[in-house]
Amino acid sequence: MRRAAPCCNVPVTFTLDLTCERLMGFNRSERAILRELASEVYEAEARTVLADLDASFREWRKKQRLSSDLLADIHAFHQRDSRDLWARYQGLDDATVVARGVAFGFIPKKKVPREILQKLNLEVWKRMGQEGDE
Image (cartoon, rainbow, N blue to C red; front, side, top):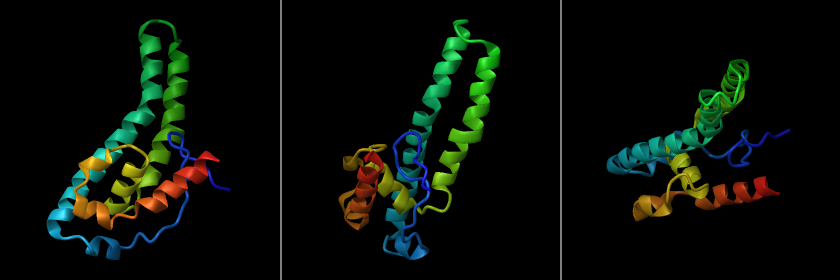
């Protein structure tokens, strides 16, 4: 059974050609750009995942939420959302992270240099997103 990622309905378990050979098609400067963009993608998705927890903290500060409920939310975040996010990015190369990030709107397509964009397989990720919506 495939589980959907909480923030974008993408299956957490998937298989693609994620070998080091994929990065070999990029030169050194492109790989540096990919590393930077991959970091931005991760941060953008992390912000999305943290939004619900942040809302719980705001309610708690306004005394609209019990401390025990906040602790339960923190525990649930640690056991589910945080682990899912970590697992999603483990083993993915930077090119795959960037392609996924563009396909799901974590970074704008215009931020990726044209030469790199041409080498990314965005269609695979777009199809996965459409399958997750069904």
